[in-house]
Amino acid sequence: MRRFLLACLATLTLAACATAPTLRGTGDLGVVIERAAGRVQIVDTSTQRHLATVAGLGDLSHASVVFSRDARFAYVFGRDGGLSRIDLLTATLTHRIVQAGNAIGGAISQDGRIVAAQNYQPGGVRLFDATTLAPLADIPAVGADGRVSKVVGLVDLPNQHFAASLFESGEIWVIDARQPQQPVVKTYAAGREPYDALVTPDGRWYVAGLYGEDGLALLDMWAPTPSIRKILAGYGRGETKLPVYKMPHLRGWAMAQGEAWLPAIGRHEVLIAGVQQGWREQGRVAVAGQPVFVMARPDGRQVWVNFAFPNNDTVQVIDTPSRQIRHTFKPCKGVLHMEFTPKGEAVWLSCRDDNRIEVYDTTTFARLATLPADNPSGIFFTSRAHRVGM
Amino acid sequence: MGRREQWMMLLGSGLLLATLCHAAPPVEPSSERRAVLLHWLRDDCGACHGMTLAGGLGSPLTAAALADKPAEGLVATLLYGRLGTAMPPWQPFISEDEARWLIDLLQSDRALSALPRAGGRP
Image (tube, rainbow over all chains, first blue to last red; front, side, top):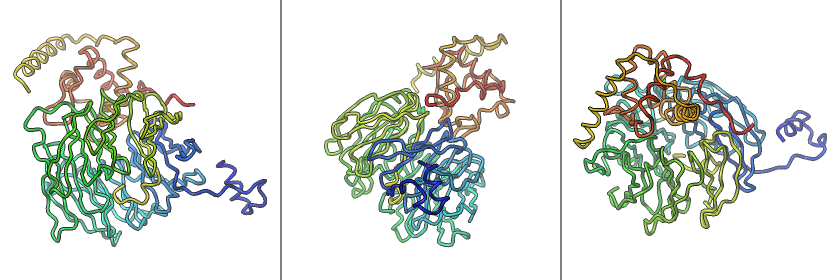
């Protein structure tokens, strides 16, 4: 398919090809990270099929993806600091740079023109032109304590801003990138060891999970002078934490029914905070292990949860109105990630240790398809292109 | 942590130190267990320390990074975790001999080549 499209492009005349290439949109496309092989698969969520593979992406042991606003290009952030831009339609790598020694993820600006990468080594945020990947700015993550920190929880915000958190320094940074070559940073003291963060889909609330204390740090981006507030403080009630064999991930998918559904740290619980209730705890749901991804189906009717080692063979589905576990199942070994189709009728699960992707119906919980994949980790669908904080 | 656990941990550390005073080479786990341990090393240790052991939220586990650290301390960290950090205890899943074998491997510069390659799908 790829060679065919390229051949058509090369001749510059479609008539030269036996048949014209099929025109298609990208709204039902996505990518699956094959972490150990340094490849991504391009998949079609309508036909539940693998379309193409793009290789040569470096170390993808922790990889994440954002999409251009035309949902044609995927930006892949690799562990080794690689930033790759992939054309989903031609299945080609259009640009690739190595922008840091050790990176963790990234974000794309509201207008789609700036790609931001968050780095562990050297710790900081770097801004790039989304079309050419030319560097725009380098923002070293030096906290108030003078230490260089690892950067986590980078998200895009409205008005060409980004927010990120500094693990060692315990700070939240809000980056004004309206002039992307001269970004302006505001810093806030957040608490001990923020490990990841989310912004709500309206762009108002930035929430950083804290590893070093019971609670989360909340920043109201709409306040005239934003300030940090601790929420769900002391949710562990002083009890000894259970060991955490994998850090949870936070993103804007946590919201359902006006509540944030959040993984507890060191407790086998999902915590529920009410946005309209000043982010106070509204309840908690006991689950099968240390939650890693706590993801609301796009309609918010269900929240799906996967778990850290040694419970990473299990997935649980919470019915949000009743806050009851609706379904528990063990789809495979090493369930690393979940991604809903744009309107949520199906969910794709990556089964790292079983080398496959499983697709499930979210109403009947029946398995719809199985796709082979080599050590799959993250699954990213293009519907993320049009959501703040994704 | 309860007092009982504290005692168990002290006892564990004591036994561990006593064992480690014999500088005998670590007992080689069975090939099945070696496969499990290497899989955990790449994928589960790798979740924090990086799949190529170069570090992530957790510190690097390359031979160079571990060169000047005493093996006993590393074995204790692996088995009992490290208080005040995100490092969890692996003692529920890994025996002391297995921990010594893993640390020996990590410090020897052979770990990366021993890790499972991409596999499964041709």
